Length: 571
Image (cartoon, one colour):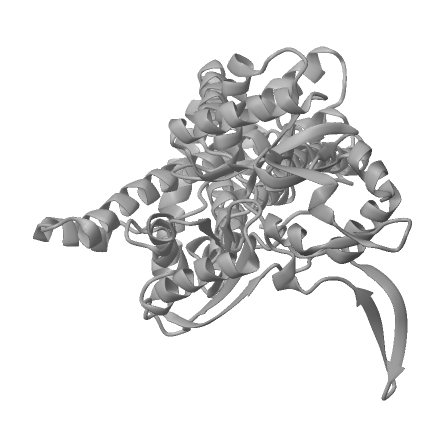
């Protein structure tokens, strides 16, 4: 019974498709115009989609940083970290956390930096993104309650690429004062624009300095050499490795230096003495003068130029949109003599976008060359590959549609969970409209475009090859394509539906790390749907147009019909 129902359905579908195909072949200019309009619509969808590098995934963990003022002691930063621990400890979904101050990643640790690694419970109702970025989430609590430091969480991506914030803008200029002034001005502008949070510049002239000047006349009168003063300050405050000892099979370094509590404040210098040339002790404060000031925390370089890095986290938009908006601001603000570049994920976004489109073009060229070798023709492969632009309509269109679904789903979530008294309708809409993140142009959706190059041409191959065989038997191009369309309709639909069914679980997002894989599946499913539908109408029109043109030019459009590629079962 089921078999007979399917047979009746395919028979009905074949009859209606025959009428549509006959209409298309009689109105070829109209079909070509509609195909061109579909390309224009694909371009519109593409331009409206946000750009991102790697989507976030709920990995059940996240990383947080605390940036205390420059010159802060580890004890001060530790107090800030304890405030963060208290906030995280009040979150019931947190299973455990680990904090550390002044971790030595690539050298001595910075006492003004603290780090927190948080692990979430597996059995929880809220996602990590909701726990961190909700209006009452950890990100806002860190910002409002940790007053003595800049504290912010960093959610992991599908592929961990860096420790810092995703947005990293590098400003270059040889003059330190000019560089500092513009970096602060730009940081303030970015904060006021509101599309970035946790904005900070890595270059600040705020590091406390104790500047020591040697009174050479008084030192000479007291018989104290400049070398003795410098050597005393170096050893007692900077430390010096004087020896090594071995004990119980272990080796220890012997460092000559004042204890930490005796070298924390400028007044500690008053307790230091140096010897003069007679061996007498002279108080160090008699031969030096001190002043307190501020200096650069570090002098960074990028491309052999002095630089400042402005970091932040995009809010309410993707990284690519934040980069584009920043470049608009820079075209307005960047003074002469300054340059800029991108680092971190922002740089990788730019490089990956250029690379993926190069690979897409390379894939198209390779597929065309393979088809040209099989068909022994330059025209038929071109006809076959016209199915690829038709797939872009579904790929970009479905991404665009689902991005709006995610937008409204996020609005409903906020309405239900954070409005003071949401109505019953809000709960109904929240249950009906899902949140579907990462519906944008990212590295996974770009890989889906490359995947489409190999998937969407199979339907065109079935049509073109069978039409060539019919023309070799004496049929004209239109009659050959009509018969090819009606006979090849069933294998085209069967192979396309089977492929879509196989990719559909990825597009829906089942299993772990679904957020990262979902864009790839959405692009593939959307592209296959529109390419299958449009291929059945557009490819016959293009094929008949080129076949008739070849006949008028005295060429044989069926030169290799008996040797063409086989891409499906015979009727």
